[in-house]
Length: 259
Image (cartoon, rainbow, N blue to C red):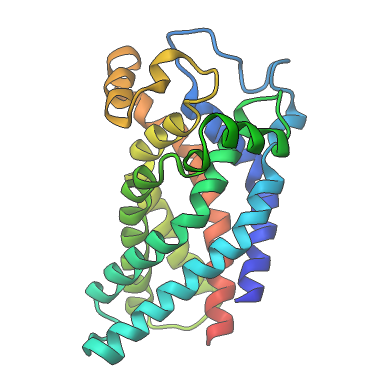
């Protein structure tokens, strides 16, 4: 699990610039003048903004996530006689892992997203600002929305991953990489619309426009009305480019060590 967490750190460093691009794409309102991703307002050096926060939270968050997933499968098997290889076991375990790990992922997402879309604040300054203006709850802004995004995301991911792994019936790292890639693309494609809404909601306390300060339902309606349904898929390719290396590296090393 330590090696898996270390792999997550490496993947985070490599993919963070793409994650920054994804976040900025998701908050751009095409009906207003917003800074371009690559123009002078957002120089390339800012693509690593939010990386320290991501690295700080990613290790414990990933450790909790994977540990909870495995523990849940084992508990369901020993206590409720539910086989570890059933779809229901994968669904329930993925749900439990996401709900628990969300307590760490949400503060990371809130701070990371705001740092990625702003230039004026440092990590410490931003943390103080959130605590002062929004209170402790500000760090967990969008937790339930995050659950709406990532619980189905994790369920789809692990059901696809485990099903492919059983079908291929091979315990090789190439198998884990292929299964993780297919599962990752599938789950990301399904969850991207909700993830876009979540991202806009989490940065809504920043200076991003009045309509971003509404709830998630109002934000979704406003996006469709002003930008069209395509706005809900903004950042999909960047999200795939960021998410696939991270999950593939982490899951492959995790599985190899577990075997």
